[in-house]
Image (tube, rainbow, N blue to C red; front, side, top):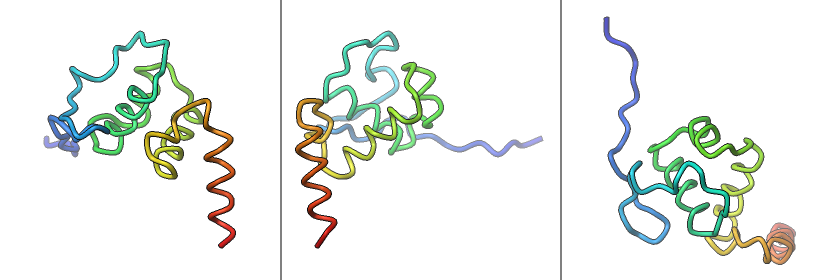
Length: 99
């Protein structure tokens, strides 16, 4: 019996343009989430290397936390993932939405 299986890519393009595979994703026990690591996880999900559920389970993230990373990347790129700049990029995005 043939099951419906999604074919996953062996690698995707990472946030800095480098090839990203399951082996070079951030370690499972990562506790310090710098911008690059967050962007790598978002790129892996967007490219189909991982599903959202797999990423959340692998890194002990909540769905809301991952979704906030994804929104930040969509709105402002990697710079939007900087914790110290969240308020700046949030207000910038809100101002852009008015026009």
